[in-house]
Amino acid sequence: MTLVVVDTSVWQRRRQPGVGDALGDAIDADAVAMVDPIELELLRSAWGGADHDEIREEYSGLHRIPLDAEIGARAVEVQSGLARRGYHRIPSVTDLLAAAAAEAVGAELWHCDRHFELIAEVTGQPLRRLGT
Image 1 (cartoon, rainbow, N blue to C red):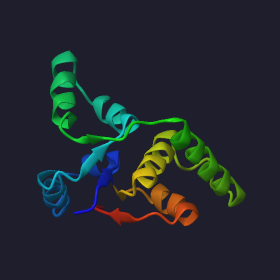
Image 2: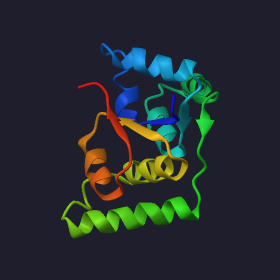
Image 3: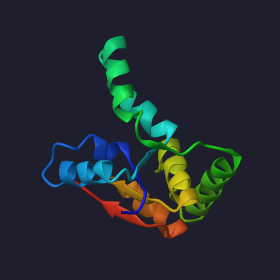
């Protein structure tokens, strides 16, 4: 299985039919990579300190894609490409950084968010839509 970056939109739908199975298969195959902006979004759902620690532990065994200046520059470049099409205000900073990180390591980006489809129109990177 190819390395995958799983967007917050998919993690939040992991109880939907098909989504949890695909996510579980990718985790079992040691193919899931995490980026800090997605983890930070996921950790916002914590009910408190103990819950935050539990959620954080859940993601600790995943591959990590560290953000660097090149990934940041690519996110800005993609946002610029979107601006030329009139869509620069649509993807969030998290979406742009996650897509740039996935692209940097050749990972497929799993999502349930049309913003990534707009991004991929600029980047041409591989995507997989899961959930509704």
